[in-house]
Image (cartoon, rainbow, N blue to C red; front, side, top):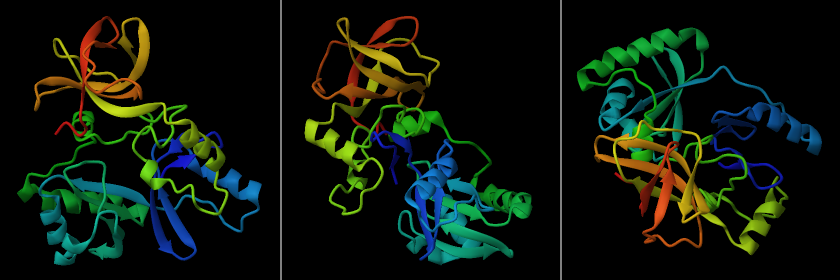
Length: 274
């Protein structure tokens, strides 16, 4: 669910869960949407209460995640569609189980609804996951770039709108209500989207990776931005995600990417890489 400010700039891309007719959760990326939501509620005189629930998500991701989650909760989990969820429990621990997560390998997120039982839940999942070779870890930048996953704060920064980063299908400009950023987004559509999100393959020796924006050049003209780059051992290539000016063709052979100390030849690639 892309959230934009009044200029049409993305300020978060949370997952939305409708818990009931009058209760919604936003599982947010790294920005303070609580302050934003409180301001919008006050500005528009809405009859809502904005708060942070006692909820903490734990992800189980990977090619064997479904088998593990089915062992823990039952075979019914295999019928959950992507982004669907169900309220359930594990050993009496209250959980909202969602088929979602920040990987293209697939899996689930366990939204713990009692913060006092976090260690118990972690250990239960860790112990059950041992037979599947599933161990505690963290999100992988390499996997996210290989998979073409969007990263708020890297790909979506100040001045980035939903159409540039592939979230345009989640924007409905035909809605009657005047949602925040609607006029700005309509103007962007009318004038034409100026950038598009692409993959890049960067030539040369392995790069250590970076998350700060770097320029893409055609001659001496800056024609885009590398938002994050890494070396992929699986593909044996330097790969990156980037925002490229719309007028630059995918088969342009003279692009160069700034990697901090030098410029290197770069070619446009499809997303996902893998």
